[in-house]
Structures are given as C-alpha cells and as structure tokens.
Amino acid sequence: MFAAALVVGMTVRAVRAPRRQRLRAAFGPIMGAGETYQELHTGQKGLQDSVIESIQESEVRPSRTDGDDR
Image (cartoon, rainbow, N blue to C red):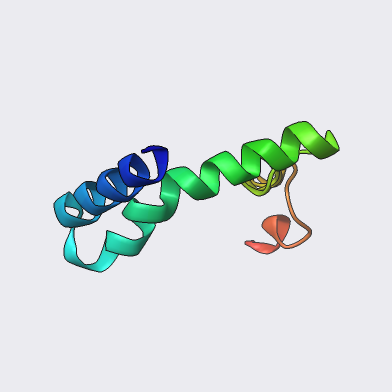
C-alpha cells in the first residue's frame, strides 16, 4: 500500500511539473529524504547545505581578483 502511494504521488508530481523538469519534480522528495537520512546517519552536512555555505562564504570573502578593477 505504501509503495502504491509513492508511485501515485510521484506520477502526479511528474504530470503537474513543467515539461523539462518532470524527473526532478517526481524524484526530488525521494532524493531529499535520502540526503536527510544520510545527514542524520553520518552527522555531516548534506550537499545542498554545503553549497549554500560555500556561496555565502564567497560573497563575504572577496577573491584575489576583486581589487584589480582599477
């Protein structure tokens, strides 16, 4: 019964999603759940959190080429 609910939910999400994003929309929740499980199991940050943190650090810390605009 649970597997049937997953299949129906993924199908509905895929049908309602825009044409080029159907696979991402259908499998996104399952991938997110897998990443959360891995975070809880290993105690490390997930990929999305690591990317967000990296972007925030690069915005705060100027690169070596930022001062060469003179």
